Image 1 (cartoon, rainbow, N blue to C red):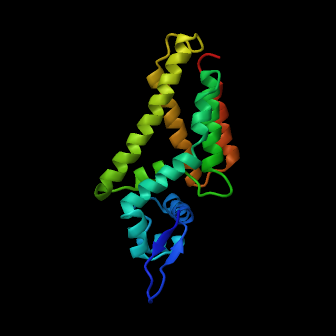
Image 2 (cartoon, rainbow, N blue to C red; image 1 turned 45 degrees about the vertical axis):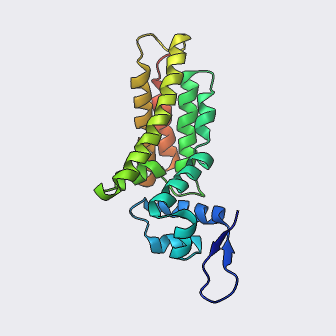
Image 3 (cartoon, rainbow, N blue to C red; image 1 turned 90 degrees about the vertical axis):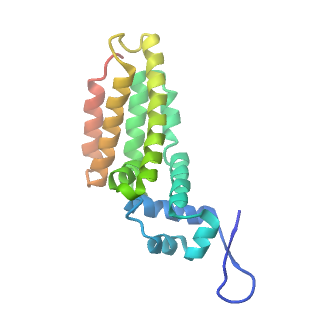
Length: 203
């Protein structure tokens, strides 16, 4: 798919690849958060003008939501794989290690886009905060369902509440993101993961 950018001179409008432009916008949002990313930074990174951005993606909020879709599809694909692990501990291990690779890698900005944007959003960006929270709740609900299955299968003790366990895991995942963004290295974060898994209930 190509989008046409308005031309400053007469003639055929210049075309650009919206996928490449969106990937560039994602990096800006991931680095700066929603409110920290200015339109000037976005258009410069995307290599397009503001009118072109509006014409192809809508306003800044619409662009962010499209970037978040891309982030979930490309960067958080490990979540679906994690839920297929044969044990609840395996689910947690895959989620934590997947988060570590994504949030503390060498090629992408550190931290979680959702966490960065939620923490940084002020009241004028309530719709963005609500959207991010809704997406996170959907992911956590999937983990709860998987842990309920694990408890029914005897993989988790009957005394364990799947909702609370999923909440505990989510807190750990968000903590990894915050520490990664703050400069914590892979070894430190891996140590936190290993310690968390060492006290995991059940197998």
